[in-house]
Length: 158
Image (tube, rainbow, N blue to C red; front, top):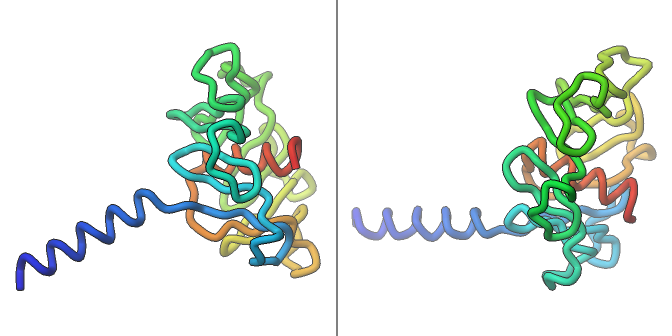
């Protein structure tokens, strides 16, 4: 019995570590509405898993363009909830910050500077929590770095 329980937990942990996170347009959960998907730190176009369709990837606290590892291809650096331009960690290069389920402009924490509200896998425009203001839906938990990569794809690629 002990071996069966261990086997089940092992299978569950393997299944979840290799899981795919899908991002849908608005409130949808239809496969035709998939914007991108995240697997192993890589964000792919729509429902693809082809390496040629990697839009960006997360490695450590950095988001890279496509499948690159070059420092010149760093799109964002995330540190303590703050999102910096490229490889920077200067306060003048803070593009946005994430705190308490909200994405704010630059280093602000004013309600008038809320870009997005994140709640229960739904990402709302501004300070809203109305269903009509859902921009996209994420079907799994993601790290802050992964969220930044997904938001980049939503805003600049999609």
